[in-house]
Image (cartoon, rainbow, N blue to C red):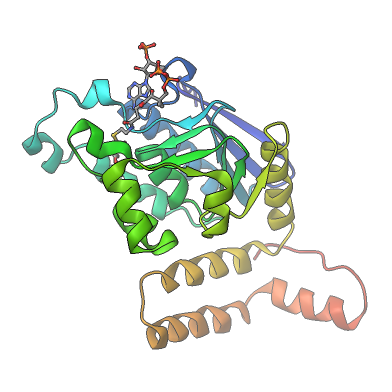
Length: 258
Ligand code: CAA
């Protein structure tokens, strides 16, 4: 498939990488770009040779938000009746682990898109923010919800009401970001982490991702029930037999990813 706004790579065994590529607009997320991102991630999700995904932008900007120029003439009825943002739930249906590698600006929808990923590896220059209020709107792709869960109510209020940016180190402190690396290393480190995850049994990795993401939504007893179902399910996989046999035989496991 030919894409105009993104680049696709497979930089390591089992790793699929999608790179936002609208440098002149700091990767502002217009509808064409976001559609391509969702399509490319979904294609990797269907590809049996890929087991972990990385979403990145440029060193200067992961993404500076939804495309303001595209939204400028859009009214409420158009937004309500199936505007582009309804599509964003497609990101939540990606079943394989998804790592955001973030450098520079991650603002508005860019910050929200990074937070929809399962982990974030940041460069020292990464800046996270929800500046929507400065253009008369508010976060519309999870910013008020996911940011609040990550940093707590008081700081989320400041971020969304006063356009306070989080530095990479602050974001790591609050648990929004896993690790911070120099600009010349963040992407290779994200790929290294993705390769490590891609080397794990694939069905188990998807079951873990699903269960941890449920922890954000369910109460503890429902979450524990959900976890137990996935745990039991994995006892039906070939990889469970292989993994336990390999342990007993003191040899590395040869995963089948089924
Ligand atoms: N939409 C459209 N174009 C954008 C953009 C955006 N979100 N962000 C940057 N650009 C464009 C600029 O218009 C500019 O294009 P031109 O050269 O054609 O003028 C180009 O990218 C470079 O930007 P700047 O000259 O502004 O670069 P800078 O280094 O001076 O500033 C910045 C960088 C602070 C990120 C600034 O560009 C900025 O504030 N951008 C907007 C951030 C924003 O408000 N994002 C939220 C959008 S709303 C949203 O995301 C809704 C939602 O919740 C889903």
